[in-house]
Image (cartoon, rainbow, N blue to C red; front, side, top):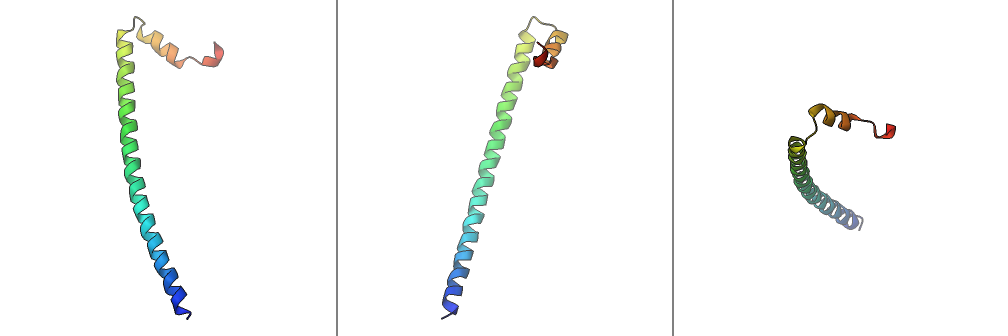
Length: 74
């Protein structure tokens, strides 16, 4: 009789391990998609910022001074 519950638990462990492996694969796939989307968004923001700088009437030095300024000292 002791053999029955042990086999049942071993089977449940195998099923749980398989489910965890599947979940990790799904997680890894979604994490890769998210990483790619975040990189695309950052590239779009970078382009937008460069275009705004190019269109600006401010000098390069003025822009850098503004960016590097400590907001707490204003």
